[in-house]
Image (cartoon, rainbow, N blue to C red; front, side, top):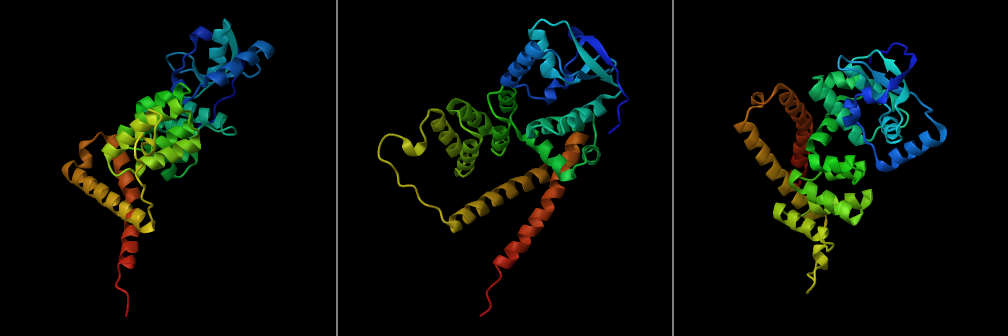
Length: 301
């Protein structure tokens, strides 16, 4: 990351500040209320961090302070303006929160912005953030797999970021319903993770949809009125058979899609993302093939 030049403290008009990078951050109502109370009782304790692209001053750090000050009717705040471009502003945003840490979904938003908006390659992002390339890929996959409506639930403070990470494991078609269940029933992160496991192990899409609909009504399928069906207890062989069927179906579907649509037909950024995902998948499949060969080898008599 480019080291920003030393910045002097200055007074800035709140109305002149842009909040373009706020899309990379969460602003929970409780945190905003706490910042507002702190400003009322103690005044501004920490300067804003800004940068100055051609469009005017933009906030890097201090979104809650600006919003709280605006609520209080304050016209100005103290700020430092760093001499960085848009890419380094995002890297600085992360560096400023290195001790407290961004949430996993905030990291994903930031990484995707560097990848999609600034057109950095995944290896470049990995070097800038001093992370492994696989970490970058996982963050991109997280946010691009997560339904935009579910991401809005997170931004509104309705859904915990870690709960959203759990929900991202579900097919897109089930994510909004799962988020609605979590919000309406007030589920904890651990309860959300268990909910996701239950949905994943439904036999098909129709069963997943019906199960979530029942939970949204406040009634799990096994608790519906009337005679209670005996729930079969799965042993390890059952779970293994279910996993084999699921992998087989997904592999067949992926093979058909790759055969019908060459990667080169997509936009360059999407092509790079898919190619990298396939390269990460190959060693997993090779390892699985080795295990299958060992497991199915005839026993010596």
